[in-house]
Length: 384
Image (cartoon, rainbow, N blue to C red):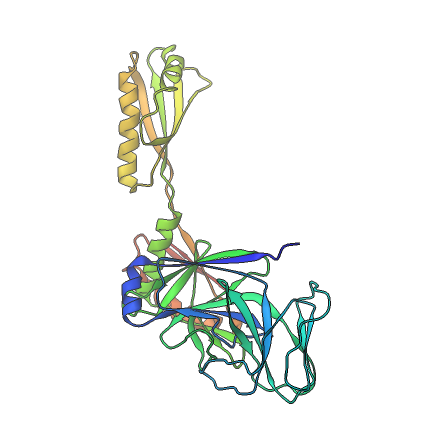
């Protein structure tokens, strides 16, 4: 059975890239092991508007005698590849022996330490290259050391981290992505208009409030976004989720037979740029109802004018175009209701909601047609 491949697409709002790179920000990823994030798995400053990362469940284990926070993780032994369910022995001479045992789906592999007290680390492959994802904070004494990698990753931007370094301080402006039930995830980063590096994330069409990760306690605390950032997130989400406007038209002809003839007439005359061109004869026999939609997304006023002109152009070319009544109706006008998921400690929910509520007036300066705010802990719903 092949090992599943995991794919992560990280998009960065193109307008934010120059300011982020000028300020020295780097895109960073960490992977969860033994219940926390401790090491920068990957870090790079040459990020683009779309960055794709792929990996398999491939691991190595190694030993390290020294631990210095913020410095590069360095192996003090050879690194041995290992699969879930297997065991690697660190022998009395400090040598890592090849893995033994049958691979399984336990989610755990282990190191048997027959050497002196030593810190144990884990490497994982990303983009074909091995790099550290974990190093124990304390040395392990002799015995069995279980290691549990979890398919969750932490993504953030900062100016100091590099691949393979230990976490020093809390990781701010981050988002955690869960791959335990899916093999692919997509996320978009949007920076504050005035402060590069302070931003928010868009996952699945919803804005996720950034969090601060505390490595000592393995907890997340929510950050309060600025009003300009919320407005910017809403604008981008609307542009991603917007759908072409849908319009209906109903025409009642003077001559009873004209309606049926018109349905046949329009069947092969769909104008260029029109996606939906559907006509139905009503039960009364003298009214034709239609459904119209443009091919491309346009501003509402432009879409309405375009569809009306397209419809009238065909109607007026029909030989029996005399009608008693013609009406147009808008059936679809996109309204985005975006969920700002409040991920993290529930203790912070009330205080955070109060802080966010105070932003409502400010947000209205950055978002058109802001009309309601509702609180449903642990989710804040903002409708635009």
